[in-house]
Length: 302
Image (tube, rainbow, N blue to C red):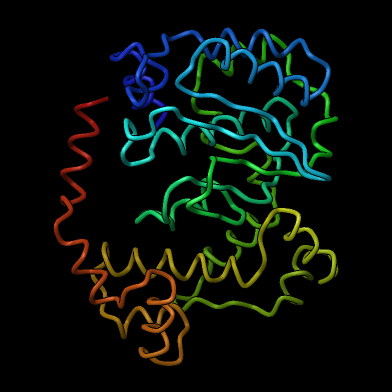
């Protein structure tokens, strides 16, 4: 993904990736980053970064708004129709969340994200980009997180920044500390099982596995914008789609492997996740190119 984005930036000489009326020449993000890293708090870093881009471009306007114990990064694209699939709007939100997290060296849990458009067909993928509540058809794009992070001091040096920029956007695609989060650890526990049938141990047993109380683990997951039932549903949904599309398994086989008591229960759950039955979902994906074709295209592009 990093190599693909770098190629697009280089080919177009546009960090906005052709999704705005006016291009943003390569080097602008680096200049902004070097400027803001001198400030003493995340609040100052974000404020100065937003001022920088508001002065540089009319295509994207932003502001930092504090509401009680929460803070919002609000974004307005002047011509969103130039980004018809909303790719860059979502990527721009990712950039600012990951950059803020990178600056202070810790994951900033999001409370919610607001989108100006209706729920897209790739809504299931948004939970990985933004593990929090999602609100659609709102007046502005927004990232919302706890205001307590504004007081955090930057922990990065100019040398760190040079490495960060050299490999950009690699560190913007991941969240610092995510691999150590309880959400990630529980996902790993559920995904890496010796049995072919997915087992979901009781929550108390999971807490014991991590040497914490159930109450503490529940609180930790809440602070990460997640919960045990949510994690189980996410994994079941992802595995169900993978087994349906890639492994070509039958509904009965998938239901059995995911631990459902009967295919009918699995079908109901699948429809709740995707809005379609497994059969209808599979038919809706038939027009897509074969995976091997995508790989060949990507390899030629890179």
